[in-house]
Structure formats: C-alpha cells, structure tokens
Length: 197
Image (cartoon, rainbow, N blue to C red; front, side, top):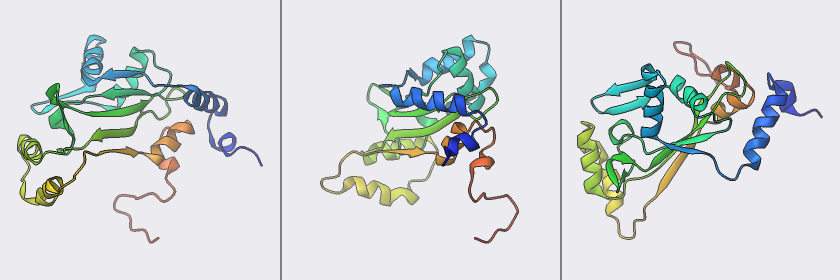
C-alpha cells in the first residue's frame, strides 16, 4: 500500500524532509515573545504586531515572518507572552509578572504559500486563587463565574498543573502542504449552513 502522505501531500518530498528533520531533532529553537516582537518591528513588519492597551499579539502572518527573520526551517517556540493577552488561567512568570509561563510551537510553512503558524500551545496553570482574581480583574472579567475554578485551587493537596493543545487539523494541513485548513477537516462546520451528522 502506498504511503498516504505520498498520495495526499502537495509536495511529498518536502513533507518527508520536514517530518524527518523534526523526528531527528533533540530540541526546537526558542525565542521569547519580546524578542519576537522586537524582531518584527526592527525588520519593518510592525503591522504584524497587534498593539493594545492590554499588551501585544503577533498576527499569524507575523509568526510565519519570524521563521524567515530567524531563518528557522523547523518548528520553534515563542515563550512568555503578555499576561493580559492570554487566558486568565495562565500563571504569571515569577521573574516578570507582566508575562506568563507559556509557549506556542510555531511551524514554518513547508512550501511557499502553504499553511504555517501555531500548531501547539501550552502553559502552566494558575495555582493561587489570589493571582486568579488579579488576572480576572486585569482583564476586566467578573470573578463570579469562576468561583468553582478558584475553589479547586483551595482544595487540600492541590498541585500545580500545566496543559497544552495540539491542533490536529492544523498539523494535518501543515504536513500535507495545504494552504487552507478546510482541506484537512473531516467534517467541517460551515457558517450559516445546517449539517446533520
């Protein structure tokens, strides 16, 4: 039976090279969020950073541009995002409370014009109810709906946790050199169209 990637990838040779590079790597390159923002600004790509009163975001095209700027040809980590631009439950960095203990794994496109960007996101969770209230307040969210979440942290023996999310359809889109995630969704949800499973 032929390799399924060989049949579905728009460029099987490049897909194979990229996947083998990942398999053989011991560690992915890392940059901080601040380094990423500075690199985009210094390279004339300020428009790829969203500046708000609550902090900064990097647009998806900015994530791809960073791979070019740093000459990354494999996935790389961006870590320590602005605290007020991520979900409230991400733990502040003890060295800098305006940042959080988190990271996104960015995949550069395999071929020009194909999908690239964040495929994995991870972070340490808040373990201190007072810090959770602080983060909710900073983000102008009501604590009322999150009492249960804070109560979990008050339980005896509660341990600090971390979590991650892997975008399976994003990974499939990336690995097949496709440019649109709709090409990789088995059962897509379409806006304003009723579907019956």
